[in-house]
Image 1 (cartoon, rainbow, N blue to C red):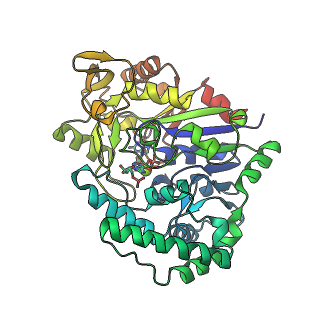
Image 2: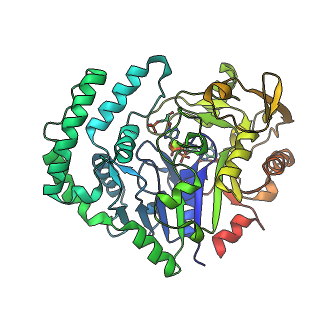
Amino acid sequence: MARAIILVGAQWGDEGKGKVVDYLANSFDITARFAGGHNAGHTVIYGDHKKFVLQLIPCGILREGKHAVIGSGTVVDPTALLSEIDMLAAAGVDVTGRLHVSARAHLIFPYHRQMDKASEAARGDGKIGTTARGIGPAYEDKMTRQGLRMCDLMDADVFRAKITRVIAEKNAISRAAYGVELETTGLIEESLRQAERLRPFMKDASTYLNRALDENRSVLFEGAQGTMLDIDHGTYPFVTSSSATSGGACTGTGVPPTRVTGVIGVTKAYTTRVGGGPFPTEMPDIEAKEVRDRGNEYGAVTGRPRRCGWLDLMMLRYAVMINGIGSMVVTKLDVFDTQKEIQVCVGYKYKGTSVKEMPAQVEKFAALEPEYKTVPGWQSPTFGLRDESKLPQLAKDYLKFISDEIGTEVGMISTGPERDATMVRAGSRLEKWLRD
Ligand code: GDP
Ligand code: IMO
Ligand code: MG
């Protein structure tokens, strides 16, 4: 069976998915995004310190001759997509003939961004801390069946008629709910101009992917966000508005579950979160600052400082269950190189009693008391290491402890932001997935 491997974030996003996908993409013919939009920021660094932050276009595009698909489960801001295409072109990466955007992908317009901001402002202290990219409002329109899709944009008459009606309704809602007048002057003409540039990229992406698999070409699904930001399984309402877990790869591309051959999870050696919402293992300010500085934990796109905390094995076990993760990638091991002692959350208590399942209610989640195990740090450099045998014993012990606790292998380790600061473990399931 052709290889179809899903890669997802196991935490609250920013686990290093971009770096890992970039590394793995060389072993696949196609990479495909299935959810989210340009709220994502996937960092890839290689060569003479070439750095890319990709938001919508799958990271596999950086590999020569490889194809990249933006699936139907994503939300596409035409302006953002075009500027990403231009950014790549300026860096010498030509996407022509290699980038395919689903005709069924929903669109984000400037009024979605306005509504995102207005809705956040209206929430006051309870705000989600969104990326203000219009993601939530665009998915809202999709679910209420008012969204406009790539295929609509390509038909000027249909587009004009639909968007005119939608704008009138949105404006009425926005005025009444937020007292905000939506700025839509020139929007239709500008969108139709953008349509002409985007037209060559539009495809029936599900047919494209299924045919590719028929022809024994391999696909790597590039998750965005992370398990705990998933609309169904995350810390609702402090989540994004799409299915960031492995199930989303099927609904978001039209590739059926029966074709999926494996699921990879990505976790940092610790935990971070951007935006609002509970975070049981969040570190006190001083420790968080140290990890933030060492790990350069600032939003890839927004520049926001990321909240930092200890690794949470309860969360990783949950991510393994929800996604069916068969191999875990641990990134940013090097960030702990100077750490004397490492704390790891092995369980939760709620009002003094052990908790076995992730609480559904966010108020309960916020009241969890993590139970920690303290393990010794290796206090020697792993930064840039590529050879597994050179890992300090205490680092190996840390990785073994993680894999024992989550009940799945640690198949790959990342020791730096550069492409080559990576090791796939000999004899791992992941190694096999890259081969056959
Ligand atoms: P993504 O959203 O999951 O793709 O992750 P981001 O790109 O938003 O954030 C991950 C950050 O960590 C980026 O700045 C990467 O360059 C960096 N990074 C990835 N892997 C490693 C690693 O193993 N070590 C270090 N020090 N940095 C890493
Ligand atoms: P990548 O793919 C980290 C967070 C936002 C906010 C919440 C909702 O780079 O891992 P949204 O704009 O999606 O409505 O915001 O989700 N968020 C992310 N956090 N990494 C991401 O993507 C994120 N995408 C959204 O900070 O808390
Ligand atoms: Mg990111």
